[in-house]
Length: 254
Length: 237
Image 1 (cartoon, rainbow over the protein chains, first blue to last red):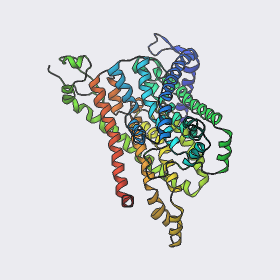
Image 2: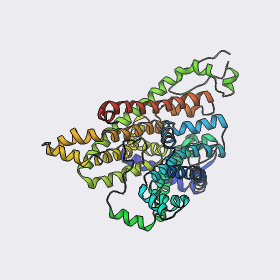
Image 3: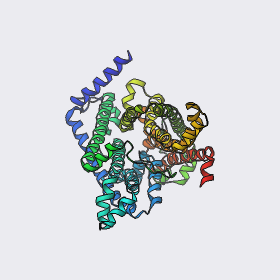
Image 4: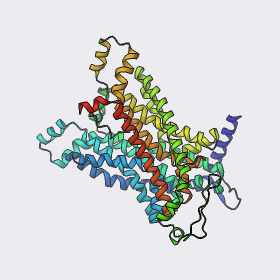
């Protein structure tokens, strides 16, 4: 019985994704590949912009601070504060105080995306073996070359872990973007009265697939970006690295 | 200037527009309104705390059990990590709705989803914490004649406690944030309050602030507990 109900709910949801039909009130046409495609495009656009800006802001800062070995307090408290403030609250705060719209929504999502990227990149650089950095310096590399050719490749796994967390958070939070006046896949989820439960479930399926695809995509980019030598080294040893060996375990690499 | 507090009906949030101060009608940040209407936030706060505590407690029990199991049978670490990471990747608002046909609207759906989200964080910290216990300590325990189970609970788990509890802290703070979306599953909480009047500054500040305070408070609570159960860490530092 339950299986049949669940099955028919999901069948309706798939039907909503594939075929246009009348809304619950019967006034407009909703669903179908056209609308879902449009909403997915919007969703991807706002998430991509927010992630790119967050990366552009936090990666250089984190690499630089990590290289200098300064600003641990900043990196740790950014991640702690970022975790404590609910994402819904950040969006709501922006909507209430700065108004709705694409730009404000992007700002809020950038704020959400920065802490994991910043902290992970910082920790990633900090945990690079200092002997390797010294060896690079001994070989005559400039500080910028050390960052680019030693610290960055060795920190890539941790950096990508941060980007992937941010990507998932941003994709999830963009579901409530309609509250900020921007239509995303969250629109069928929030406007239940128009789209009904098939729309809600259908959009949820698409969002979940989007998040899983983004995560897999970043994993693939990470594999491509990792130098061949590191992959061989990784296969050689069972434990890749010890994260944060001291008892300071506030910074976590999820 | 008189404010007429309106009692929430059926868990809903109704705001009376008559007789409001200009601050409130302009959706401003109004300390007076906040002070007069604080009682509106009591029930959502409790709901939010309830969802969080139940989910994190349940999640902690499951993840620790899985972690201890995976510590004995190392081959389980990979598959469990994979499954929990995939669960974590599904956006929480979508997860609540994907569960709806199965568990229906209400707290059950919210708790199932929130519990699933805690797994990846706590499980990883339990497994890493146990793996990071110094081999010397384990050897010494074996040398003193401890059976494997005795060794686990009297040496390995206590030494792994800081990392296990670090996972619990992250899970608690994260769950407070995710529970803000539980209103989509028909469970209340502060998220419902925020979403109901997202343009009203006073409401957003109070409800968002309460959720933030809850996350920070739970974090500090677990930190205090960690200090209490690992006295040797303070002695060493």
